[in-house]
Amino acid sequence: MCMDDCCSSSSRRDFLKLGAMLTAAGAVPLLSSLQARAAAEPDAPVRIGYLPITDAAPLLVAHNNGLFEAEGIKAERPVMLRSWAQVVEAFISGQVNVIHLLSPMTVWARYGSKVPAKVVAWNHVGGSGLTVASDITDITQLGGKTVAIPFWYSIHNVVVQQMFRDKGLQPVSRPANAAVAANEVNLLVLPPSDMPPALASKRIAGYIVAEPFNALAEDLKVGRVQRFTGDVWRNHACCVVFMHEHDLDNRPEWSQKVVNAIVKAQLWTRDHRAEAAALLSKAGPNRYTPHTPQVLSKVLAPAPGDRDAYVQSGAIRHRQWDEQRIDFQPYPFPSYTEELVRRLKDTLIEGDKSFLAALDPAHVARDLVDDRFVRNSIEAAGGLSAFGLADSYERREEFAV
Image 1 (spheres, rainbow, N blue to C red):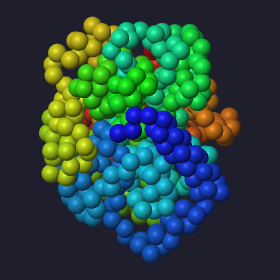
Image 2: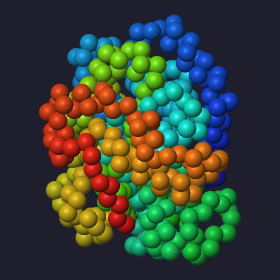
Image 3: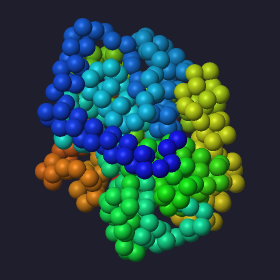
Image 4: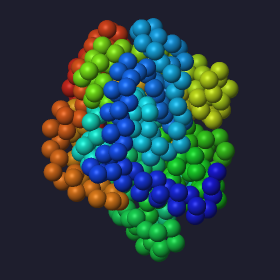
């Protein structure tokens, strides 16, 4: 684990690499590789690329439980990657064909660089939090300090900036050693695995990220959860399932079976949370992640008293929402995509985000998302009610800091 300035340098290189790839010119060689692979292997098996975070759970459960094979399609062992740059590069070039990707990053990929891919389902909801140093009890105490985010195009960045603004704090992006005013919070991109040691060494005052890195900070006793993101934006998507358009258009039956397996994996995970934590852990037969069953259980199958403790501390303020620390439902509600696009326009993001200004939220909700397959899968699984939702493909977004 990197605990000095090499972390921020490495993260910046990753961001610059992604910025280069996610441009029309930068994507060309990768897309050429994708086309060549598709032509050479028209019946390619399921090849999953993932990061070792709980966001990947449905993809990994589907593989572990043989759900792709049960649908009659082949699946290779999922490939664990170390950064979002690696995930995107492997996907655009065709090395993998099914990935979980930060939902805002799909907007950047499709409209910033014209990557021919679409969101076919949500991978999970919630599953993220703002973790701070143990001596911090209010967000205002982050003024003049540095907070880490996993990526500029992330739901974490969108949510935390709104939380700061609501407390009169201004998000900024400055070099690591630059002065930060008392009413400013400096945002620093760090890989999730570098966040707990950076917090422990006091390089940062907090971080907002996917699980299980919030649970890990608690387990290591280096920080406390200030707020869960699902308690700010109710049932928000974080990572979504992203697939190539050429598969969706040219292999619709295969694509349907891929989505069927992922939806069934989500249902299974909802009903087997402790078992899911065990199989995803480093103690599991496939060693999908480097995390302990104890840490993953805190996220997937928390102890009964945890919720009351979080309500008392203020990490949960909307108890009536009855949110799980992480939950699973696959339908990509259009209202969420529309609200996401609106909020991205007003979010501080490094790099050229000029393409966002021209985006129409309603158009993006129709164009970025292909919900044909997931609707079929949901109906076959018993409808949205099987996931604890009202039986409607429309909803109203609830965002309350």
